[in-house]
Length: 211
Image (cartoon, rainbow, N blue to C red):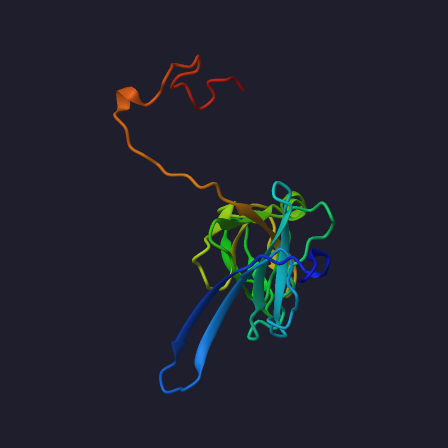
């Protein structure tokens, strides 16, 4: 009998998709590992890395894998700058200096592809320092990356300042925050039965609580 002390606790779900590429005999296999702890990192290629998110409610660590695209020579590893930071920095993954004129916006490619598990999302937010010093921000902040998106992560940067701004190769441009989504279901009801009781505010909005 194997003692519990000798067993490395690992809970993982594996999604295995196997399909044959046209004209090839070898199957292409995709593994998704959601684990408390991975016994080995040999699943990851040289340019593939992990994000580990700790769930304080269940004392679990959610492992999320991402990769840096080889064609983006300045793609940076995803990292949080401090232990308490919520966001992972995103950078300009291209080798080009990208100009953003005042009042204009550009799409910046990060060279990052991320495998977000079902039930999670990634939000793309502005960097406070970049916004405060240069007026440069994420135009659709927070942008959303859904779990079924498998393409390159791109950032829409807007120059709200008065000067031309250059996005340097490898420069940090935004931050990405991973969020767990609640499991909800929306149900349509008869309008008159929507609210169980009236509130003091009612349908008052857009500045109704004061300036």
